[in-house]
Length: 308
Length: 266
Image (spheres, rainbow over the protein chains, first blue to last red):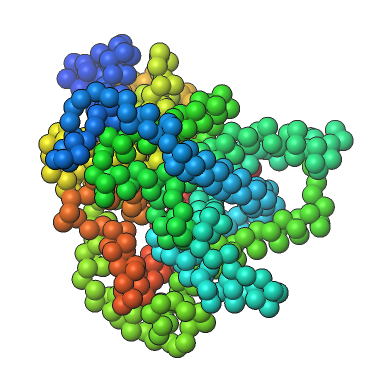
């Protein structure tokens, strides 16, 4: 370290305040009372999340136990399980739930399968310069509006669209609008959210570990399976949380490319809007809430929640 | 593990194909913004720049961009403060209920947007009796933006350890001085990355926005939703999407440079 004696002591302002000043006493008090420090740190955020979010969710769940007066359209505060029972037993809700979960799972699997080789190439094969360009290339489409991208797929998959135009010479057809189009579009929309955590996870796998595995006689596949996969598993799960939960609640994409198909989000939306039945909508919303809680509980042990 | 040349080639090929697929719809958007056709027929029948001229004169679109910028900046600022506080609290302290709090932070992004949307809508209108406005929208956005800041900052704090902070307080610096001169400079790039994600999340959010924005508040996604299905406006929407993607290169580039400059050998 070189010292330039002629330089004026410009950093004097940063010296800690003298003993006895209020700031100093406060600082001493705080460092002796970690609990106070902790409550000062967590007070504001917990107030925000607890008051804004948890209270709102709880209120919504309580609304599910109320009912709508069919004559006035007002919510009447009589306790009933009718909405919950209707959602649990109605065949419409069962069909739509199965369809939604199926779409969300398929989208998640497709995204992981596509993301793994790309993330691996980015993290372990590409030169640092190419790596940087690839990350930018993956991040950039996130800034094109979600709606514009969904609508672009509508135009790509339309009759006489670019998809038909590309595959027609090989005798192919556009899938048209429907569940396949929904799955394609949702996979497209959430792909960057799956690639990025997996890439970050792979970056944390040291190259030396891969070399050690090779030196000890591990082939490519066994190294991938026994060394790389266990290390990036939390990152994969973290990516899957994004694609799964974003697909589970979507109702706009399915409106744009899904034809007449409905997902859970559509049922909630139509009950809030056109049908003006918030209690029933809240009861339907319980389905994705329960599914997500089950999913989070199942993956909590993998440590995925620290990798989002 | 040493990858053979064919294996490397295969990985490169897969990456190239998927990147091509990622950019195909964006290319369609780009081409359609110059198309004389209003209903996105392919191939485009003719070339025109009139949509670009129209987009830059469209007051609705420019107002919507400004509104979205305001909302995204405000909710990012709130998320930066709350996310930093909560991640220091959870990373530097051991206490009962820590896991519950980290779940609480993740929940607004893990639960479907429509659930968050109707829950907040119900709480604002019937619970608190307030009119929906730009403020309720900012509150809603900040709630689900906290998680991106939280994740970036807590990962950084975990990696930093406490030795430098301990040294600083051993040398007589108070809590605030230590944070300002030791902790914060080391968090800066994590805050930038988390803030950028929060900004992007808020800027493009449509579902929660539908339920929590006042009727006079038109963010860009709401404006796009209004205009996407109008024949005369759809190409203008394409122009705006193209401009957004191009402009986004700047912040992403800086985020990359900051991250790259700090990166250790892999």
